[in-house]
Image (tube, rainbow, N blue to C red):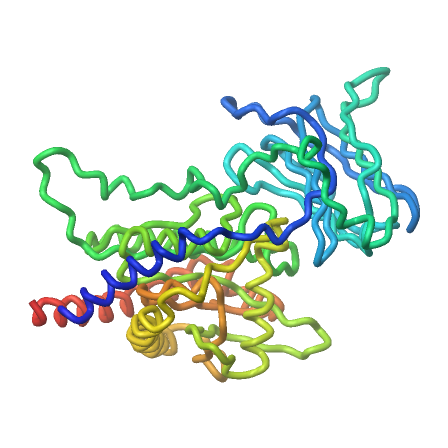
Length: 432
């Protein structure tokens, strides 16, 4: 245990040094408009009732109908080409299927990106600039409208950086400060003066996707909702036993950037991090079914694992974020030393989890895999990503929406967590 403690201390020093390095902003901001967004102090959020695109591959207009005017901020990003529009929290009541592309826009998506803030992200067919953007007040029986006008440009014109005096002062992204759904420490960790210290292991449950990022979808079901229901059920099961302090990276329909998810576990010195997802295969790639458990590795165990890791690692881009990777050139040896030990524990838990789940739920034909998932890269927290099934498979989807199946799967996962942490705590006690 002394060696383990020393590694944690050295790793902490190394990461503090890394954090002090300047981070390059990989995005190019080429257009913005509207006054600063107000803080949201009421639940009477604006309602978006319709959205549409008009125009062609040279000029395209986006129109969003609202029940009241809103402030907004529009930004263009490259690689891939996108337009990101930030607004105060909006209740999107748009028709099913809204988001199809036209003209310069391949497709667009929308949703909550942080408490009090919503976002619309447009995937562009190529470089384009925002020629005009404004909000119209309701008049003559017509609703309030947010209008965005785009025009095709070449890449050279797209990447031109605004002069400093014209550069918009953008509000910090969600990565700059923990969102309201992720406290610096859980309520159970807040100690009253004179109260005994809560020494229970911390288990972090991470329901994937959320907010603007729906994840995979099939038959009217979204991955973000399925995995949130599963994560909340697992939290309730673990909290009922009272053995652990359980923290959720999100407990509502909010988007959380990938790096923030693993930071929750690191900041709380978590004993275990479990990320919950539900995969899907395109029809052209056949069918697959059953749960799969993934651990971190530098090289994917197979092509399917690599495909999934690539898809999951694009979550920040889907939501419009363009975050720089953490520095990797500081104290590589120390970090690698800790990661090796952590990966051993992660693999141990993955095998325990497979053993518990296979007797209760249907497993994938190759249930243990590995790949370079960003969300699993906390160097000192054992972490796994569990794909609880395929929403693209009819049988799996029936299970995923079933409370009975969910209860059995949650029970198996809770038992694996008990077994794993009991052994770790026993080992730690012996080390002391």
